[in-house]
Length: 463
Image (cartoon, rainbow, N blue to C red; front, side, top):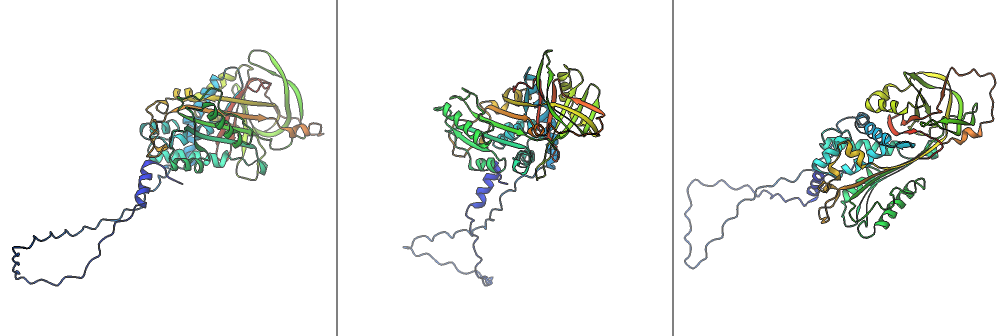
């Protein structure tokens, strides 16, 4: 892991400087007589003798560079703290502000982008960013915790392994500065190596439209054409500072083919009392299922690939057709509520879930400010660890924290099997039909990382 803090960078330079030579010891002198020797008289015409140089004092060679700071706790523990302190509060604010539309957010993706930026921050700016990310007091150990969580999530959880049979997952993350900025080599390399992201420059001041196109093209390429753009028109101008961005695409198939199920057109009842007719996937299975006071929860596992990841969708369905916001208020106001109400018992359940696609894009800046993260957005923010020592440009500050999610719940395998029948199978004991607004979580089970949170208010609309 490359250490790119200013302290480690200076230590690295010290370790590569030429070592001073320690003078070698000469032959041992003979023991002098105790009788004093007469001093020679100087010749009148001779010049005064040169002073005898002092014996050089050996200078110890510099030691090795300071070791990279170690995380203060296991990454699973740090991840749990980050999800409680950062991911849940952020998702709650975003979904509450989404109004009457469908919405989805990836707290893990936003966490990765902010952790990357925090790696280039110093002083109070860094301390505030790390505290917001749930990493404690902001020391070097806290910075290592944030980097450790972000690195493991992007490499283990958000990396696409669809070829092995798992969900299709595309992730792009980066930080962009104006072309006048000279980014630090250490920071650029850490962005690519540690965070699987990029740190780049673009000409914000003179060619803002070209800069936006450059960023959008990179996102399109990095997500393999699943997300074609991240920056809205007109976002970049000559006053733009740093732009942070994260984009995620997800599509999975359910664990097994619904060979006893069907795809049918059914009514979905919206919050305003109207209804829309949309395709539903209907089948029965033994699944983890829970009935609580006022709502039900079911776990729908996705088909897994040949790796350690295991994704599942949890759907929280209120009993009342208009009960979604009351339910999500409970979920986000109590940090332990979500974990405490996940299902733990298996039941034979009749399942009905609408097919839907969500495309959701938002600037996180105002939500982060509401979470008391303010210093990175000020003109006197300190991002000196992001730039080279000889950078003479203007001080950096964050202008925007852009985030985009495209999520597809549309399993074609179920359509292919919709005509099959099974005779003699017992009827399900319980029924779970998501025919009115619901909240969902997509989680990676091995790490417990919450990849997506969202709600569906109208499955006939993408937004």
